Image (cartoon, rainbow, N blue to C red):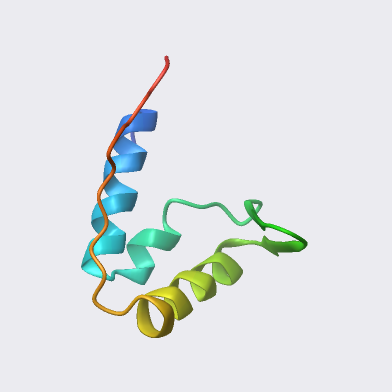
Length: 77
């Protein structure tokens, strides 16, 4: 990825492609070290590596070989 500021749509498209490719490093690249992900009801993952671990588990154990699409994308700004 280039170092320009990505639009929300560019981030979304990159993220979806990385998930479908199973590319954990590219998935993690969409998060900063200060990022956090809230998983209801009471789990909070903090930082790039913790979030990457969630995707690794999901893509290898919970949803192996899954391909994901977005039915509706709404981007403002």
